[in-house]
Amino acid sequence: MTFEDLLGLEILDSSDEQVLARVPVRETVKQPMGLVHGGLYAAVAESLATAATQTALADQDVTAVGLGTSTAFLRPISEGTVHAHARRLHRGRTTWVWNVELTDDAGRLCATVRMTVAVRRGPAPDRPQPP
Amino acid sequence: MTFEDLLGLEILDSSDEQVLARVPVRETVKQPMGLVHGGLYAAVAESLATAATQTALADQDVTAVGLGTSTAFLRPISEGTVHAHARRLHRGRTTWVWNVELTDDAGRLCATVRMTVAVRRGPAPDRPQPP
Amino acid sequence: MTFEDLLGLEILDSSDEQVLARVPVRETVKQPMGLVHGGLYAAVAESLATAATQTALADQDVTAVGLGTSTAFLRPISEGTVHAHARRLHRGRTTWVWNVELTDDAGRLCATVRMTVAVRRGPAPDRPQPP
Amino acid sequence: MTFEDLLGLEILDSSDEQVLARVPVRETVKQPMGLVHGGLYAAVAESLATAATQTALADQDVTAVGLGTSTAFLRPISEGTVHAHARRLHRGRTTWVWNVELTDDAGRLCATVRMTVAVRRGPAPDRPQPP
Image 1 (cartoon, each protein chain N blue to C red):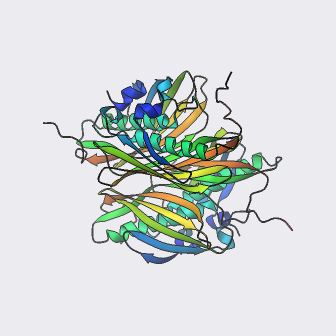
Image 2 (spheres, rainbow over the protein chains, first blue to last red; image 1 turned 135 degrees about the vertical axis):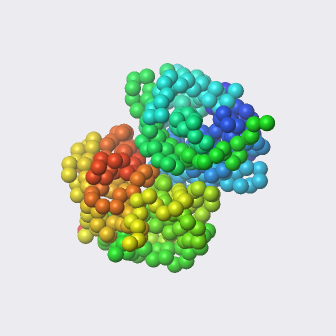
Image 3 (cartoon, each protein chain N blue to C red; image 1 turned 45 degrees about the horizontal axis):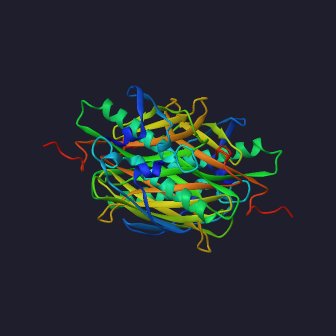
């Protein structure tokens, strides 16, 4: 069971330009006041951007590694579903940049995350090697 | 069970100026490559900064609300413990700003997060009201 | 002469939802390698977002104050014109959030900036008072 | 005359681990309300971090290129000098990360900027080539 399973992240559609996904709101993704934890938005963005970049480059000997995220919280969500829409802003030789919008069931923008992904030659330096 | 429980976040020491905490590395906080998921760092920072601000202002009729986080990933962690050290950079009338450093068991800086917390008069607009 | 004059910022159209502006590329906005200095993108975003928020609230006794910016550099510009398009993502009671896209003459996205503006009651604490 | 000259940036001391610099506050670095323009802080951070990275790697065939900045504004400055202290947080193979603190004459923290610099093999793709 990975962190994505723990979050309950469901990928609905994915390409090298955009990803649609969602997370059902359960008690386990809330903070003590009953709102979806802000960390969830950054976690979802990280998962979608890194996976989509890695998948798009699957035929090359590269590893997609998160460099950083920047998140703005606009409106709390306390029930229903968190809808995520990741769009690629930039496809560079060494970095890809994604913007991820998180909306509620009424379609209101609740958080926005920018994620920069590094594209590195070879496997990740600290990635456990197969035996 | 809240999101903090899910993460396994343990607060070791907390004041209105700094917080020490840790997260044991388990499979459930890793992404598919076996590294601690980047979203965990932002989630930990959000939890520490918001809770410490709220606690410091407990005798006032205000609510601490996360406005945004900015995270840089410097070095992956794959085992042991994630150590978090939150320090307050600024205590304003309407916002508090925290910096949170995440280190591994060898004391190496692995991620750094800046978190801005809004201090709002009254309870949060969407906070569930007590009966 | 203000910082905006120094930059050569020209506002083309402005409302409370979006702003169009541009900066002609001159030697004085470049860094030593001959590219537009990255600081210009953050400066332009700050100017557009803060001014548009302040103007939209001109009939209220509030001050628009920048809280933070987050900038990603995607592609360098070395000549022509920097085109800026600011769009409001969120209009809250205490913060407004804007996204600003910077493009070159070919319409390519070269930088993107997210800017959070605080809306504070009364004049700014440190603003020089009229005599 | 470059953008740094326009800003009035003075480097006092520089190594591959930290840089000390300052900017005298003049009318030309202020916004209309009489405060130092927020864009100045990001511009100073960009200049210091990129130059220090490039200088440290001068004997290698690499180019230091800004990837992104994240700035929090804590307290306005309206007179005196802006003091800048850049510290390197991370020296990686493909990215260096710096934190830059901006203080006023009383030593108060007024802004903080995190800057990520990419280290790329060869000259910058769009850098003008010598004849």
